[in-house]
Length: 310
Ligand SMILES: [Zn+2]
Image (cartoon, rainbow, N blue to C red; front, side):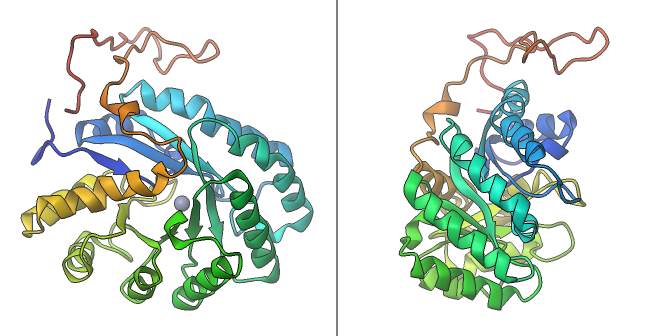
């Protein structure tokens, strides 16, 4: 099988697939998404116990990786205390204590997503502590920039990162827009853009950004989660860029290679992981659990079969 308009492969380096369905996984694989990164984030309401974080982190490195593989997609994650929940200091302290254990797991490619939401003192405190933690474990950092006071929050985040002497090539600044990207790129960071349907970064606007700023250090992602969002945002935007005359090489950089280079710095994110994958075998179980229900026939690809995406 091939994708609609192109045989290009895609990486979605920011998607919360725990909140998505198996239909989404199937559609993503069909559209050419070969690998994804799921940043730890908040779940729509604040957690009240550190055990909830512990189980969430372990599902990111465990069950969700298994579930993605059942549909031919290689799953990685980032581990971090998100900005909203950094405002609960007692809980934040406990989360900081369990984080190193998870940061050491394979398939963890960065500390993130961390940064500012309301730009409170506690958000800043835990941003700084987690930047130091990233230095200790030698992992890249994924920065969430606030949706309100975007420009101020983005610049402040970069100032703080610079105070902690983390080189910009180790940091992905996400949720950029036309107002922030020039400065983010000028300072040497990876500039990621989230394609939300209808709001914020639409596909059309992303095409214009790549035309204006070029593909260097620009990364496209979906940030699809439990809200109104599109798990196919990366392949759709890639295809739209091609239609609008963006060179294929630039599409490859912004929708695949730049994410690979940025998160490859973790030593945990290698193309060979997904170029020659194990064949899909939905008879496989995770701690006794299957992705299939009620007597559904498992998909079992023979080793000699080509992958769904080529
Ligand atoms: Zn996110």
